[in-house]
Amino acid sequence: MPSYKPLDRVSALYRSTTHGTALALGQRVEKVEPHERHGQRVWVSMPDDAAEPLADYYADSDRIEHMEADPIGQQSAGHLYINLVWFLKVAANDSTSPRLVNGQRVEVPYTSRERADAAARAALYISALRHANPRLFSRWEASEIETARP
Image (tube, rainbow, N blue to C red; front, side, top):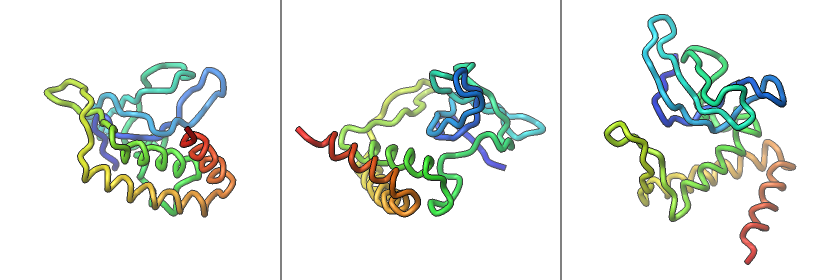
């Protein structure tokens, strides 16, 4: 059974006010409590179109999973894309991470080692996305080129 902790990155099915059932990728776990039958009860922050800003799940549910629960070669194109974007953000020089310090959520700079590891993971995701969905990869690449222009 998966185990979650606050600030984990997850994907979760949720109720959208505009699209019915939808999949939110790269959401953050906000709160976790032990649950006798399901291991944990997990609360996740939801996108703006969600019927509720904070949705709750049981850890053993198939409606929630860690963003990297599946090996790269088995992730959907959407998961690959979101993970790629996230690892590129972590690799940036000014990147910070939400961390819990004395029970408070604070932004802490990533270490140079964490940034280097993220850059290496981003390279793997670039290759995987290029292979899994060339059209999505081309759109991502074009947007990166456009963003990099002065």
